[in-house]
Structure formats: structure tokens, C-alpha cells
Figure 1 (cartoon, rainbow, N blue to C red):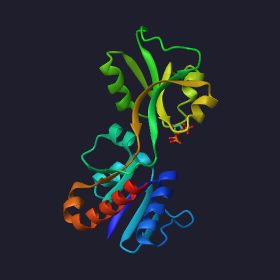
Figure 2: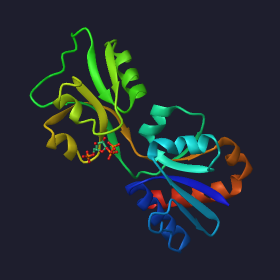
Figure 3: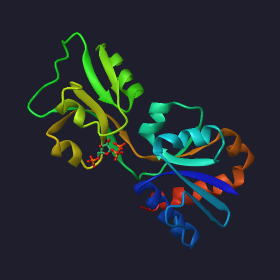
Length: 205
Ligand code: PRP
């Protein structure tokens, strides 16, 4: 049995579609169920930020999660394969028509990614106050909770609809297959089989 943690939402649907086409039988969660057991696989549906934790503690063997989440969490897990799905960018953004005043003694940045944010600004020797939020980051500059935000942009619609602009792209992200270190050695044959099937499908796309 191989267990795999998937992030809730669009990536989970895409991954199950990929498994359906690889293994020729339908993989889909039923109703509000968070567990899908089929053939030799068990999939768990978790919040994307939690995927690396499940993998680190070997609650699952494998996980699929965005590179942005891996860069933010920095845990001791194996990055196996870029799946080329779930593409997005981590950006610095602020109000349209304003430019960020980097000479201010302290700039307030709202984000759900404090580590990526601190790294980005420390490389530029800019002092910031990180305001950690858990979602709806785009609201922060509009109500002067922050001077700017560091957030995920996929289509760009959310930022546009709130009169925000992208000032800089901090990193590009896509979904990665990750593995627990012990599982990787204990279940190497099975895991490499999945890896090879995913890889040949990705290169075909
Ligand atoms: C992300 C991000 C933006 C939105 C961007 O939020 O924080 O709000 O998606 O997408 P767009 O560029 O296509 O408009 P997410 O959906 O992950 O929800 P969350 O804020 O609850 O984490």
C-alpha cells in the first residue's frame, strides 16, 4: 500500500485524473470523504500547507504540493519530481498607482508566507514588519493594514479586482511529488514505479 497526501482543490482533481489515465480505473473522492482507497493506493485530502507535515511524519509515503509551500516550510523531505501542474507565482504586490517607499524605516508586508518574505527582503537589506495572515491577503493594503503583500498569483484576477499590481515576481511555483525519506527506501520499487509513470506522462504533455 502506498499512501499519498493531496492538497484540496484543483491540484487534487488534476492528480486523480492523471492516476485515472495511468492506471486505467477511476480515481475520485466520493461526497465529502477525505480518504480514497483503491487498488494499492490510499489518497488523503489535506490543506496544502499541511501536505509536507504528513510526509515528514510518515503519516503518508508521498505527497503532492506546490514548490511555494516547500520553500516556505523547509522540511527534511525528498523532492522527487516537478509535475508541471498547479503553476502560479509568488509576488510582491501593492496598490495600483502607488509605489512602495523602500526608504521608510519599516515597511509592513502582509503575507501567509513569512519565511519566503523575510528571505526576499533580507537579501535586499530592507527592514520589514511581517504581518502574518491566513488568507484574503489582498485586503491588507486596501485597509492600510500593510504597505504591500507577498502572495500567490495564478490568473491575477484577485489582485486586479482589488486594484493591486504586481511589483515583482519572487518565485515561480508548480506542484511537486515529494516523498518521506524512510518510505522512499522501504518502498523504493513501488515509489519508483509511480515516479516513472508520472514522469513519462508529464514529458508527453
Ligand atoms: C490564492 C491567493 C490569492 C488567489 C490568487 O488564494 O492567496 O488570493 O489564490 O488567485 P488568482 O490570481 O487566480 O486570482 P487561495 O485560493 O489559495 O486561498 P487562501 O487565500 O484561502 O489561501
